[in-house]
Image (cartoon, rainbow, N blue to C red; front, side):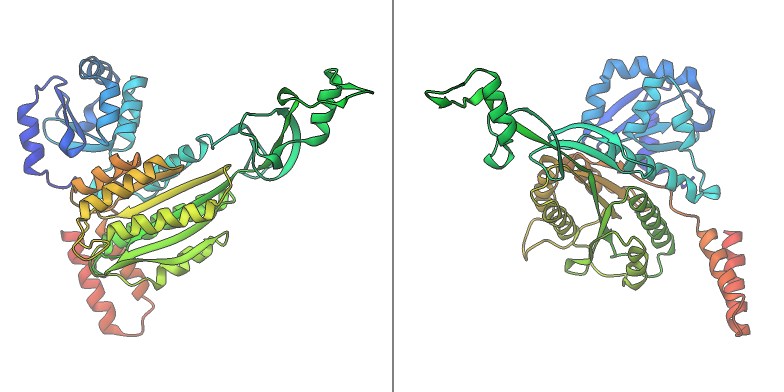
Length: 411
């Protein structure tokens, strides 16, 4: 594990050793201490006993005011997203916590893969606006939805809502309903009343739009962060393909965000676009958030049976306002609240190696899932570079890379 910060050490001293806990609203954190030497020693009994302490604080309050939890043992600590921690507490099981315990010397890509897949899958399963019912269609991992005022094939009719539009009134079923209700005679003809109106129910495929908003302000030699980002993009592209969804890409660095790729079903394009991206520069985080949100809303159009997911992959820094002289934090909070009030389902993936309260506040204000994945091991990157250069005909390249690889093992 990385060396602990002075703040974590102070919190450990302050909290009672036996399941002492406290909410730090300013940092959007919960801290809880366990009477064990290492986090890996925590068992199911500890989780059950910790729940008693958490219930005093209020589990609902914890869920509403925090985005991550610090789990403190005597000699080490672990930060996990608050949803995962609450899940473990409600189950009375240490498994969800221990499964996320990834030591720096043995970080694996499949850990990131599984966690991101679970989060995106959960976001996709949330009900869409005005959705009546969902069911699996065929063998593909796509859902069909029965919606009012949507698009697709008309499959049945129901009594109309008060705000039904003229285009969604089923004329023949409405006339039939009126006749069956006795509103027709040979003298006055047919009288259609409000309660006779029938509304169309459509069946259409629930479409998933995923917008990737990518921070490219890293230095080009920051191999850890770039390798993690590349792997995350591959995972998200695979998920999009499985869901038969659409994916769009936005990057931000320098003075503004840029649309790298419009929404497309060609998920291989994402990997190609990433290889062409240039890294480095300032961090216009607000511009990236704004561009991604507007892109999703345009893609949704007037369709209500659409799942819109925005995945922000960032290091948590922001140093460029939307407009000269603008207040960066105010801009971020404004668009975060706008995302929260919309139908967009956000996921914030923090890939910085240091804690940044700004990215946590952004997640909190946007109502986003927050995930801080373990950065891929530097040794893996060094080993990969070494293997790639083996085929090189230049002896000096092989020697230089070999030296760097051996030095990384010593460190």
